[in-house]
Each structure stands twice: as C-alpha cells, then as structure tokens.
Length: 151
Image (tube, rainbow, N blue to C red):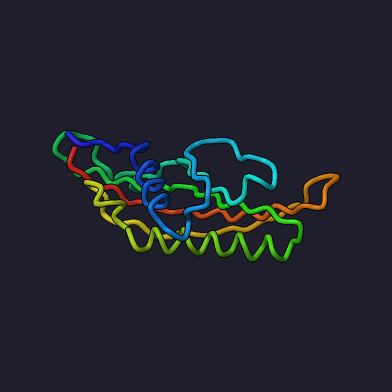
C-alpha cells in the first residue's frame, strides 16, 4: 500500500537543488529557521506547506482506490546585500535558478507516484535590517507536487 511520504518530497527537492552547479554556493536546508547576517547568503529553505487533496466527495478513502494529493512546497530564497537593488537582483537570480532546476527535474529524481510538479506562484518581499545598512530580499516559491497512488 502506497502513501504520501511528505518528507521525501522535501528531501528530493533539496537533492535536486543541491546537485545544480549554479546553486553550489547556496546553503540549502529543510524546515530550518532563516539565518540572519550577510555571511549566510544565499540561503534556500524548503518547507512542507498545507496539504490539499481532491475536492470533497471526489476522494475515495478506501483500499484499492487512487489517492490524489496536491502537496505545496514552499521554497524560500534569501539574499543579503548592502544595496537594495543588488539584493533584489541576486534574489531574483536565485529564484530563477531554483525554478529552472525544478523545471528540469519535474519528477524529482523519478519519485514513485509523483504524477507531475509545477510552479504555482512566486512572491517577493524585502526589508532593511534595523540599525544596519543591509537589505534582505526574499523570494517565496510555491512548488506544487501532484502525488497519485493506489492505496
């Protein structure tokens, strides 16, 4: 009987990103607090978000039935810099590189029962570190994974 291994999805996202040459200098972590300080950039955090299943009445929960689950993964890409414009450019580049890495490996290293995955959305925000002349720019990617298996 198959079931969704939620942590394995996050671990495979980390593995895909860790093997990308253009992300070599990035610290990539699963379910860790964001580090603070300019020496920690670039940083990528991978988080399991809420789990969304099929619409009510369409998901049969019984043995021998197909289990359809949409698993949103939040991927936080953070960059620090003294100048806001540079922080924005660096974070944008980091989000682009993560997006390309995942687009090139939509099955997350041939994960069993992963039907497909796709970019759902990207949100950006920035803030200046209090009492310092440094900027933090964050891009939050929501990557959707469609898991489909017979239970």
